[in-house]
Amino acid sequence: MTTLNIAVAGASGRMGRALLECIAQAPDLRLHGALDRPGSPFLDRDAGELIGAPCGVVIHEDFMAMASECDALIDFTRPEATLGYLEICRNVGVGMVIGTTGLSVDQRERIAAAALEIPIVLAPNMSVGVNLVLKLLESAAGVLKDGYDVEVIEAHHRHKVDAPSGTALRMGEVVATALGRDLSECAVYGREGVTGERAPATIGFATVRGGDIVGDHTVLFAGMGERVEIAHKASSRATFAMGALRAARFIANRESGLFDMQDVLGLR
Image 1 (cartoon, helix red, strand yellow):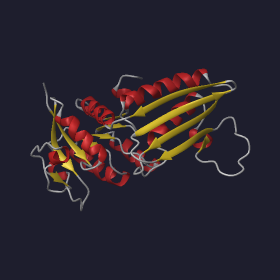
Image 2 (image 1 turned 90 degrees about the vertical axis):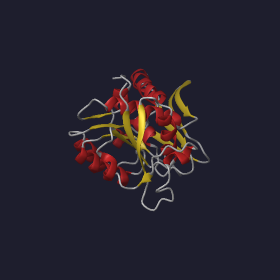
Image 3 (image 1 turned 45 degrees about the vertical axis):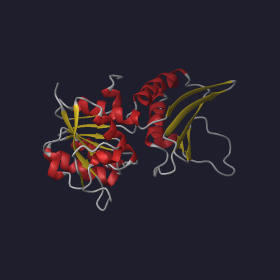
Image 4 (image 1 turned 180 degrees about the vertical axis):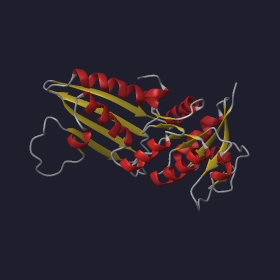
């Protein structure tokens, strides 16, 4: 069995710690590098201390020093940090699994350009369940295309900095595409005051932030006399971490290409 060397960006964060735990339990994966932001109080500490299991891998801020021996970098950080890691991976030839959300159009284009040279899995949500939901939404939208209003409701913890979530936006994109619409033209991200009647072709988004909610997403198809709801509720970040590890295995033998979790899971 081949063992893959994995580096984790944002090791001290919520997702970083979940990844450390899952890697420690995976017989075919080895934690090769743990990265954190400059000035982090966790720099130069054993990454395993974050999960109560010292492993001998010290947390650094310099990815370049370890990049050449990595098989993949898993990154759930911020867009600016992701783009910095992207350039190093591109120069060294290391694949990336990117779960960072809040990426701009330009940043996505830069990732797509890098994918011409290295393999990249880019997905706003690595959960197997969420990606199955995306497939179900495509089917549901095709059936419920006439006479049904679409609303996307999402909830996350108080620390999340972007809204709507990347997962909610992806759900909206899937539904819009299935309905022959452009989400950038039909999305409604907030309602306040006298808004008038709901335009039938719009897709609405509602955002909740509070407490320690890991991630709840519901797509509501509301018709006259009935409602259809397709929902996913995450109770642990381990589901995202396990999906990210599947993505790392997926790109292990690929030279280049831009993929998402639908590719990883064979749902296309």
